[in-house]
Length: 78
Image (cartoon, rainbow, N blue to C red; front, side):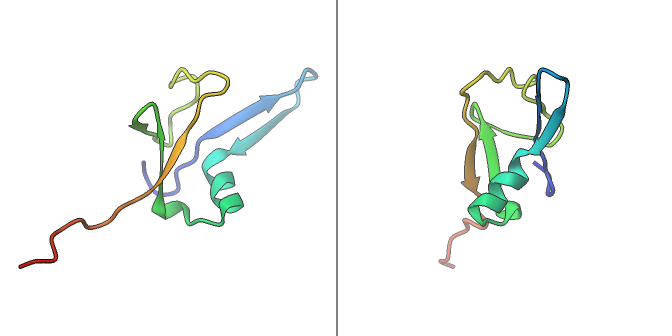
């Protein structure tokens, strides 16, 4: 997923009014975390900005996992 990624969900009422939620931004703001350090995963696949819930065949109650990006991983021994 690229930096600045956004998964947007629209909620539409019966009268046709829509509200759009930028899920990743909302999660990071609520949790007080830096979005650049997180990765969002659904069904063991990292989410990309352009994917929609329909693309992923998401259903009511599905879960998106959030993980802290791990940098490095090289050995400290020379």
